[in-house]
Length: 199
Image 1 (cartoon, rainbow, N blue to C red):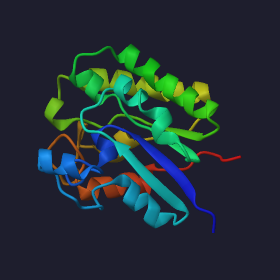
Image 2: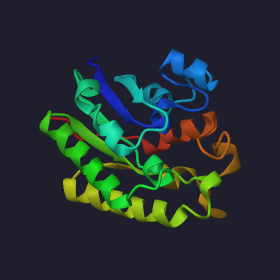
Image 3: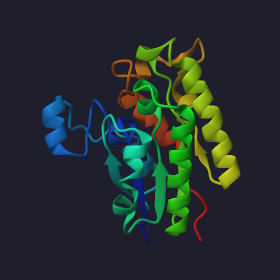
Image 4: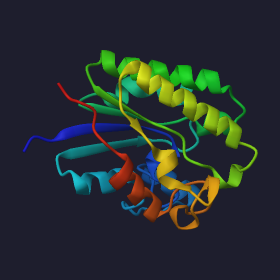
């Protein structure tokens, strides 16, 4: 069986915070765990054993910082998963510039010959309600971007949103109000992830 190498490029949601970080030094510095189940990639790979994920998530990075790492991280990959944007909002950056950074990453990945998928932004319990309008606007633009570029969207937001408390993750799906719990990451990996069409 041929493996499919997937470059997962993004911020702490890609990294697996707070239960996991791909960098042992970062785990030690931030006091994060080393539980591989605290990654959506772990659960996606259990469902499809062809998938060989490379976790390139870095805690706290904005979309411009993530974009600067793309080519090096994507070397040798077949698929690129682009995820980011919440740190742009948290750091007071423009939603429009975040979307343009995401667009640039999508186009760069396609230029490199990769299948590309784009994840939207999770609800943020600890930022609610102040950041919810910006998150909703960013996600609207991210979904429009995916349609324009003809790529799949990974519906991270709706997969973890509590239907009884819009704009927030359900309590059992979040570790501390910022990031998913293991149960949340499992939902993302099992329910939200899908591959793009590969040529």
